[in-house]
Image (cartoon, rainbow, N blue to C red; front, side, top):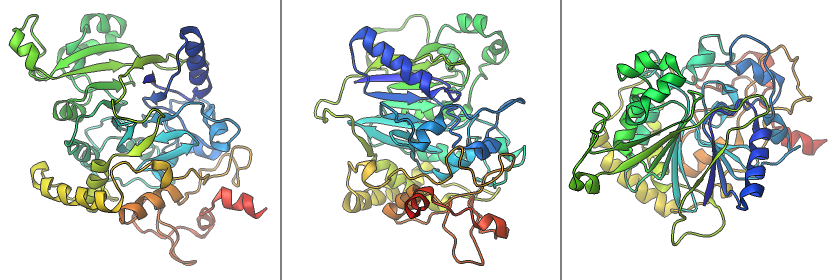
Length: 429
């Protein structure tokens, strides 16, 4: 398989697909899959821009809205994670993962899927110590503080990913870097290109501590990251700890017994210019030829087992130890195999459906923040797993409405009209 990878997207989807087409023409190959490491900036309309955390200055819709509206179609199966510059209201709608637009699949706040048997896991957001052990408490309309805290990594997602143990993870995607991974590559060249990294790097504090934990637990074959806006590579040998970078020499026996992760960080898109790189990954020998996106059975089992611990308040109830969950995960995996199967195509369950109006068809003034929407894909995912939709449950009746971001709050009457499905409305015209 030919897998194209782009670091931070920054709203430049058109440039990414154009560069891939150019690479295909110049090199006479066909790219099968595109992975984007965050900052997609998936604003559907001008109201969504109020949920986009970027530096001061004008906010642009970028190119995503044309893929959301159907004006354009992604030419390649695209898998994305979230970063720290996102339309967080839309990503929350698909907390468990789902189609942001036709052929553009979001892994969710954390997730694991398979493409032709290739196991791809990932986590969205960046690390912030102040919010790591909290629940997902953020609510629309976002404040300046919650506009940023919503994309901060939580311990809950790290725990879920730590439980992926049944088979190796081929590719792990993150926006942030694992802590101290720079020490396993040419860190001096990195610090020369990015001098501000040197202080944290020399103290072995550059990057995310929870991602370091995942790196040592999962030992994926490849780890793809973005965020730092620089190209960088390293090889982590797991017989060494991340606090002890490898020595310059090692014995043949050590080398033969070690498990290695190839870490690669990718540069950002600039104005109308992508920085795509194409990796060649050997296909699974007995896998199908066509690129197919399927659920990962173990991830579904983990999602069922850990769902009761998903907190929608500031307080996160104590999370169980990994060792205490093994038997429960095994039971849930048996349930998944019996009720769903091991290679369930995602498109059989989750079908893209527009929720918010398209750009140019907003139902609110552009200077107002967006309403919230129940997403049918989240409803379908939860129904498949027979779990409660805590993320954006539909209104319970005309007089009361669950909060779209959890908590069961009653919304003000003007906001009740926000339960709007554009596709259904279009069919009624």
